[in-house]
Amino acid sequence: MKRRVIILALALLAAVFALLRMARWSNPQTPPPVKVDLEAFNRNRVARQQAFIDTVTASGEWRNGAGGVRFRLIEEALQAGDSLKRGDWVHWQARAALADDSVCFERPLSFKWQATDVPTGFHDLASATSVGDSVEAWLPAHMAWGLTGHQNLVPPDAIIHLNYRWHPAAP
Image (cartoon, rainbow, N blue to C red; front, side, top):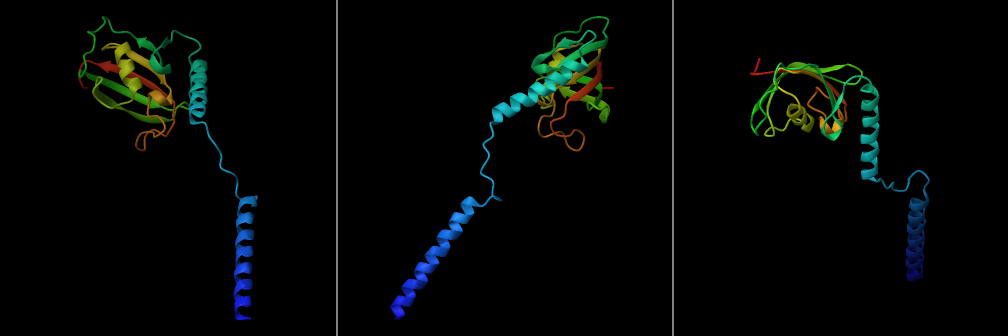
């Protein structure tokens, strides 16, 4: 008799366990895992940002930079400067804003060309412009601060509207 009770208790426990397991897999509140194609997601994100920059820069004499950066010279230097060498200092008086013109920062910005970890778009702009130039540029997020943003100044995945004047030495 005792043995029969133990067998029935074990059978009941197994049945409850099986029911709980089936309920877990068929529970409509637990969605199935979603497979995300991150490459396609990032391609689409970059394409949307580029479409926005294309719209904003549709008129005027905008130049194409690397990686989707667009820039135009507001005021060109009287003479083109020497070409940059790795480690040369670049000194800008810069204003960075978001697409809605919210200012992220407005300050002097100095960095070593191709030797500092400022955004890639900054190095590319320095390659394409000269000391004395005043420049307006649009940088897609992947050429600016990307998915992480920058401290408390630039939000993640932000398109940056950059205006700068290139000074020969730190202002």
